[in-house]
Length: 356
Image (cartoon, rainbow, N blue to C red; front, side, top):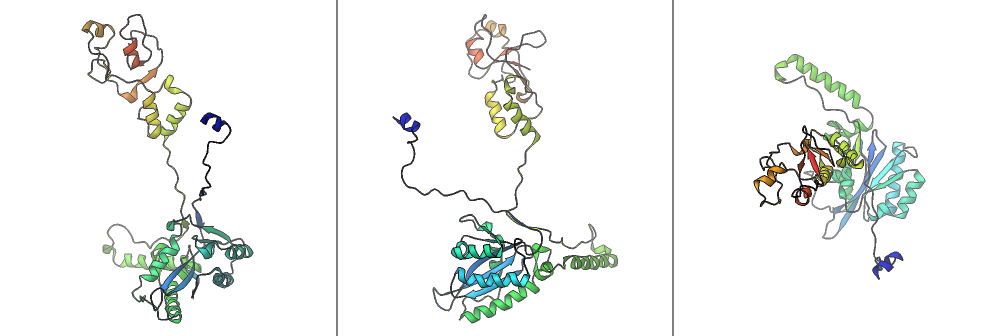
């Protein structure tokens, strides 16, 4: 009955269950300011329990500069529209250049936000569900904000929250030397002053090296590197070794039934596949016997089939052949299942043989 149902495509889950789609990992690259912006909303505790103010922040992931922020009483896509319009107009971002990345919150996925981005010519990007690592710049910025020594536990009113955020973002953009951008300030990177700042630092360090070379033991000093690119989820290249490629090609062409000559063991899944396809070799000093073979034969029977000859060849240096003709130069040793079936019969040849 199940075969009949399967032939008619009836053997399946009949309940109306939700099937989650496969979400792609966002991979975004910014090589200059105003290419990729990231935005998010965080809560600021109000004067009483369960009361909050909502801080909207848009930042540039290349320079880490906060390009727009506001504090509101609610979390809504309608409040985000004037903030984004003002930020784009202030930084003169042309249509088709900017990508706006956010998580999957309600205002971020709202239809009003999607229509706004389409009208402005902004590409939208979202996190995977329940994956905060896909929006690391906004998350890290909120931690920097809330771990400030002057950050209060609660704000008395919304004006107090706006006053604190105004002073904090002025300091953050103009005076904060960010470790992720070569200890430069955010305004210096955002407005293209990195080359001048880096050259001035290099000149200062060279002068210090000329005046006091004994202070620099290993090498002449150099300033931190200039920022060149910022990634959200940089792609990780898969490392494929030469041995893995050769072994995969050997398996595809059926080389286990012909010759396999190698000087190194195979790696990964290919190694296990080839080991399963190989006949078992007698261990060194075992008298040519394979594990599990009959041990009640006489010495004459074992000597007749060459089982008392030691076999010391390493497993990965063996050349596997099927039906190789016997000669004096290359003696053939019966192993594996052939030893059980054909090794005890003088007129039956072994089914699998190994040449050392």
